[in-house]
Length: 207
Length: 207
Image (tube, rainbow over all chains, first blue to last red; front, side, top):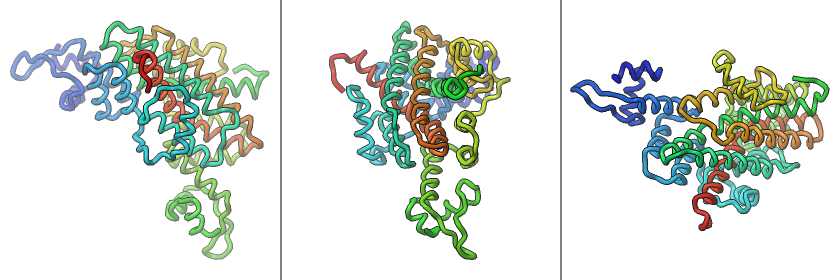
């Protein structure tokens, strides 16, 4: 299909498609004449993926380019996961994180195989420092119970990846799941908080 | 203590403290002369709370003002939860969300007491639409398993709130937990993903 049809089919403006081509988020079409290229359904799918990770996932174009490059590479799944995780995580410098907080998060994650520079480990330690810095304390195992729930979610993530047929499908699921999973979980957590509040504080009523 | 000492004790610049006073995030001190006020340890604690929810939680000053007003009000816990949830959630208009996706999320949350305008319910429906729009499908119960984990996390959240002594402490925990909980969970999820990947794909090695 021509550029104009690619725009109409994907719902993405032609100017935006040209921008994605320049930024190499979208592979070039097959050149059929001096000023025309042919695009396929793969281009439509890629455009949808770009919009999902930038609009719903909130990634910058530069970050989107990094995760798309990971999908297109021959890297193994663990490497693709690492790239996707780094891109969706706010950058944290290890030297900005309190050593004692990191040690306490490591105690929560005892037995987990997590590398020292895992962005999530440092993010969790930052939350611990902030939480206690405002006078809060975990009286009912808040951190340990979150870690248990995170393990269930990670198993669900990996089970979806395992169910995909080939490497390309698996890495796409890694990227989409990593980017969208945060939004899904925080949404469901808000629904669950309302439900649990209603059960505890208004047991007689129905929503 | 005087303004300068409040700055030194809290680690917040005096110009920033004056800005928070103007924006009513921080209550005024007790006036002791025409151009001096006296501040207490409560002001130091409030400054730490403002920084936690704006810097680690990523809230705007306007959003922070809303949740702090909820803490300072006489509203019940369910109302405070609702305010905190709305403030930390990206605004979604119900008419922008696909009805079929909402119905399918409602099926996932069957038996939960969730109001129609719960921001998390609509956010989850948006994720479902986006997920399937890029050709993904949940082959291993991704949505249901996230919902189960979200319920565990919400129980942990409410247990912490229940463990607090009085209304002010409970509402502070509601706000801090709602704001920081997303960052904590997404961090622990990344650590869990690395752990589960390592166990599945490199069973012989140790991290």
